[in-house]
Length: 91
Image (cartoon, rainbow, N blue to C red; front, side):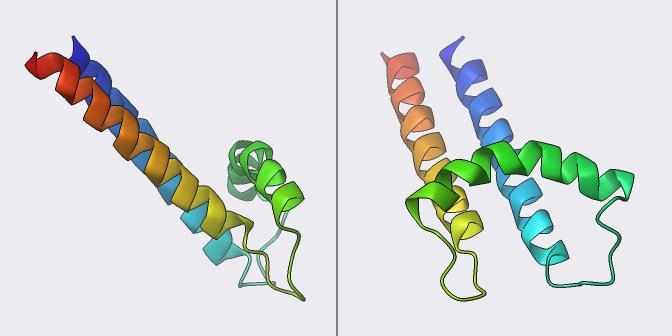
């Protein structure tokens, strides 16, 4: 049971990291339509996560570091949770 939960948490963490990374890459291309359904879907997933990090660290000049901080936090929390769950599974 703990192994399955650890695997699920790992998959969700990896998916969130990938989604935030893709959204950050898309911001580098100003010709992309912000109203495109794919972009809007990515925004609906990313903005609730990134808004908290934007409050912690507002943009520095034109550089928004919130995706980097969010990915770091997601990876940290995912690894800690997976490590704890796998420790419980072992015994």
